[in-house]
Image 1 (cartoon, rainbow, N blue to C red):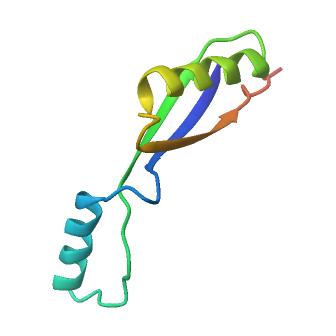
Image 2: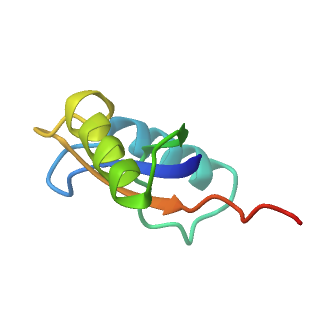
Length: 87
């Protein structure tokens, strides 16, 4: 079992209305030093795969097919190997 931590963010050229709303809220709360906020998605996915390469390929396919819109979003992920068996 592998744990994938997936980060999906808008491409830099894409307008981010949620980020602008959060930025306004932070300024209203007194956090005037915040200059920019970009909103994104974070997902944790457990993948049952025989090895890290197979797990990586599965997560990559998931991101390309469903989790990220390639027109406006970018993605990256980290893959944690399973913990060794106690013994």
